[in-house]
Length: 327
Image (tube, rainbow, N blue to C red; front, top):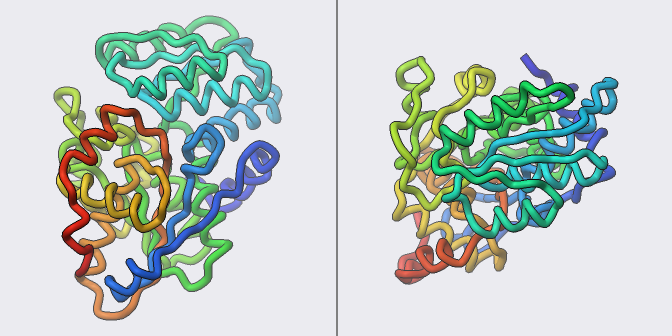
């Protein structure tokens, strides 16, 4: 299993290429909740999402270990696609990204903008099949979106930064898609202090990780999940990430109504643009805080800010700001 030293090594590799993102808090929200919540804002990261960390670490690690590929391929519905394209651009390595055609148009265009060739297909299964075939070619290296140790190490650096910046944290919460960020955050959190609790949060409509944890066997979704949290639309977690998710202190599922509610409220309170996937995490925070009898200090990872116009319309179709977020 990965250790804190692996996350620290990743931080050293990627520090020349990333932003050390800000940590924000809302005094108003904290007064309503009676707890302190700190938001690590990876929407201010390169490519607008934490995924830059995992991609940059993996490519840097390949170069460090003498494995520079002739070409990189990846499969993604969004932010990982941009991240790998960006990482390839930084190191002058050609990149081809395989994406389902229902991916965010903003993320597709941004991926092309970073110089990658983009291949679209009708379903995630076809996308995954195409990348596997492409990875068989000589000199080609496949960087998966989450099920890779160096990707996990890179993603964990966001939590490492946050916990090095804020003292006396009681719990860390991350959204969970394939589990790369949650796994890396677990390693960083428990490496810094086993007393800090680590939680994952997932959309109820795309709850393959929760199902897997309940059954003890990796479960796969039967169709494209209908959730606004497009960053957590993975069909199944990986065999590597599953082993880390089993060690979490808890896991929460959040319905679509609550995802919309917290996307509106965090946009309003923090004055930032953020994706529904990370706003969703506050639903899990609220479920946990309702069980706590003493004041808690919590870190939430805001994973990205790449939201397209159709999603924005859905988020703001109904006004949720008339109902205060109180426990």
